[in-house]
Amino acid sequence: MMISDRNRIDAFIKALGQGKPVPGGGAAAALAGALGAALLMKVANFTIGKKRYRVYERDAKNILGKAETLVKRLSSYVERDARAYDEYARTKSKAAIKKATLCVSEIAKLSSAGLKFCPRLRKIGNRNLMGDLYAAELLLKASAQAADNLVKLNRKWMGR
Image (cartoon, rainbow, N blue to C red):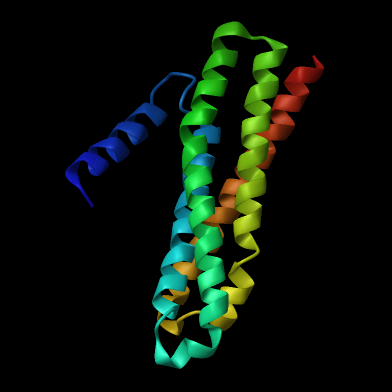
């Protein structure tokens, strides 16, 4: 890990804990999902090219590509969600809360999509990476559930 990356992680965590509206739960859910998807990539990468898992190489490569896409998309929602919720915090408009709700809805969908790879990787993945797969599954579940709860809460606000 690069020093500048570490500084960005520290800055995000510090900002998350401050008494300000953003970043908040949606951005944290997106980051958790991205971390989970990155761990799916790790398991797939440690499966590909190993003689013992050669019969599963095609599946592992397919999962690797899809998990990589999930990482990119979920990572982009860390900032997108923060911007959308910041707009709502400033304006309190229905349009802004709808935009924020769409962000967390997409985070929930993406993380749920990542969860679908866990059972297959449990069967075909490198046995030495099952702890990483377990962590991936927990992070993806947390992301999906947190984002889904935010969708429900936002919809209550929209109904007012």
